[in-house]
Image 1: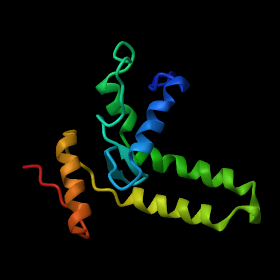
Image 2 (image 1 turned 180 degrees about the vertical axis):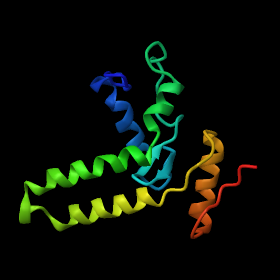
Image 3 (image 1 turned 30 degrees about the vertical axis):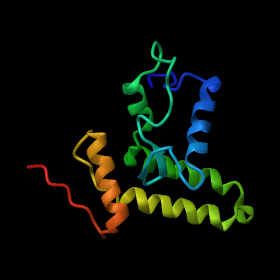
Length: 138
């Protein structure tokens, strides 16, 4: 952000690894939301205790936001990078990039920043598996 990193640094990456481990097993405790790029931690699922002076919930919110426009803008650069590998590039990487591009292009615009509501809608999506979700704003 503005030429600097949002996350406090490599020394704090163990907090993310802790969340990953909490997502495993029969009774996972680490919470996440599904995004076009995959599962992303909820704002409160990564322990940021002791970082309050340099990192807060607002910072976490910015860090975990998945902006489809920003991600789509990066895809052409990834494709350009892949060109250097020619036929040696595993087809699975191209397939995954194509799939990511498709997921990013079909994202519903969410008209709220209310994480509780967004999480609830995602939970209902996962449970009911609708073809589309339509947001009503008025």
